[in-house]
Length: 290
Image (cartoon, rainbow, N blue to C red; front, side):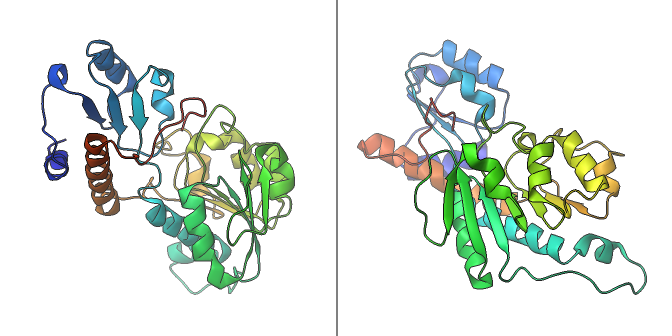
């Protein structure tokens, strides 16, 4: 990752071989490779992961090292994409964008609707801010409920069904953990109901793809806008591609134009904090897995 060398230098760090390193900045290479490198270099005391989602490496946590991630670093960009996907669904944009002739007038407004966000981290907080001008009624379902500015109801994950019940929009924006994997299943989709639009900007595995396919086909929910899928990439010819009520973007909520500067800033900030012994940003909680 040559493009991160300037960030290391700006923070006063030096790029060196693993045998001489105290810290490691890890990109998108496989977790098995990371585990092998760390096992052979016990002198590495801190690992900086560049992505917000760290579930692929969770088996390595709790090894006595400090782990930090990119969580929160691109929250504004991802929240902006989530709002885009929600509005596109409400305005029935997919068939309109595909049309080659004048068609029917349909769609509905986001103003005054009920929106539930699954997850209470940086993306959720940014999305709440972006939703404010639409005067929506926002609910949040998160692992550790606590009051959030701009949110009318904050509920524990155990109340997921109640949280999404009859919501006009449900936005998946939380970390993927054993608890959240497959959480949006047929039961949750039925609870959302035929007026609801599902948006996923988190991880595809939050959603049971077969259940979502059936719900869209049967119009159990109004539709779905997905920036992430399970599997990913979604195979050519998968039924989700053909539905007018399913809009898919290729994991592009945080494109390189926004991701790379944010990663550089996080690396620089955390190297400086590590050297100075000050609190670091994006510390991974080994027990929670994010």
